Length: 442
Image (cartoon, rainbow, N blue to C red; front, top):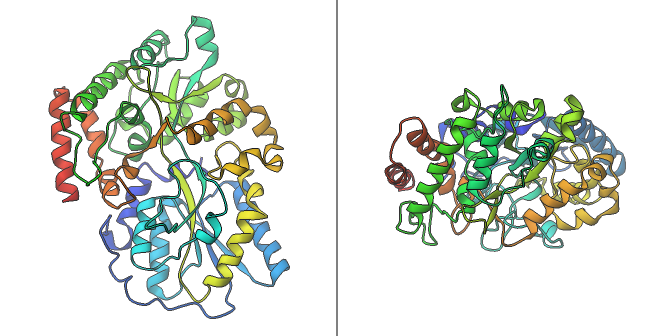
C-alpha cells in the first residue's frame, strides 16, 4: 500500500520533523534564514509531489506535459513519500536549488517555512473559494498553503454485522463499547484502535476525547489537560479505552496504519478508524467487504457531540525567482485540473474546497456515485460547526508549532499505555502526561 501517505512508516510526521539536521519542531530552521539562491528566470518549475499512488503519478506526468505544451514552461515532478518531503524541501533551499511548489502534510512544517520567509501567501488562490472547517490555518490573515484534501480519521463499521445482531449506530461511548463487545466472535474482534507510540495512535485513537470536549491548551497556550474541567473528561476517556482494549486483536500496541487498514479490508475487526482509503482498498482487494462498510463519526460519552480526527494535505509555493510562474502553474492546477487530480483517489481525497462537492464534473465518477452516502457524511463532518474537527497537532487557539511538539513526542499514546498496559489510575495518567507536555512546550 505504498500509495497511502500514512504507510510511509508509523512515524511519518515524526521522521519529517526530525529531518533537516534533527531539528524537530524548533522555532526556527537552522541555516534557512539566510537568503536563498533563487532559481534563474525562465527555469523549469520544480514540483515536489508526495501522493505516490499509480493514478496520481500518472496524472502529474500527463499534467506536466500538458502544461508545457500549453505554456512552454517545463514542469519537473519529483515524487517521494511524504515522510521525506520536509527534508527534501529544506535540503533544496540550503543547496540553492529549491523546489518551487511542494506537497506538505503537516501544518507545523508550513509554519516553520513561513516563519523563515521561505514560502509565500496564497490568498490570491484561496480567497475566492469557501472552505471546510479548520483547514486553511491562516496566520495573521495570510494563508500559506493550498489544502487539496482532508484525511479525516472516521470510524468504519460492519453494516452486515449490525443488521445481523440488531445493533444500532451508537451515539455514546457505552453504546459503542457494547457493540464492540457484542461483535467479538472467534477470530473476529470488536475493534482496533492503536495504542502504541506511533503516528497511527496519534491520528486514530483520540477523537473520542475531542468529542468529549477535552483540550490540551487554553486560549493563552496554558496546558489545561489536567485542569479541574478537563481532567475528569480525559480520565473518563482512558477508562473507556481500557474497556475497548479486550475487544481488540493481539498486537494492538504495535498496530500501524497498515494493520488497521488490512484488518478492516479483511473483515477481521468489526470497527476501526481510517480515511477514505479503506473504501478504495476494499473495492480493489475485497469488493464484497467494501459494500458492507459504513462510516460514523467519533462520539462523546453522553451522545451530544461528534468528532473526526483531523488530517490534511496541501501545497506550498516557495519564495524564489520562479514564484510568479509557479503561482500561474498553481492557478491552472487548482482550477482546470483540480477535479482530475481528486479523481485519482476519489474517495480518499476528500475535498477541502466546498464548491467541489457540487461540481458535476467531480460527481461524475463511478466511485463517488457508488459511495454517495458515505461521501455526504464526510462532507457534513467538515461543514457542520457542531462537529469537532481537530487533532493533537492542530490543538490550541491558533496554528502554532507547540502542538506539533506534543505530536512528535508521543506523549498522548503513552498516556494510553500508562492506563491500559501499566494499570495506572486514569487521573494520575492524565496528570503525568500534562506535566510532560509542559516540559515539552516550555
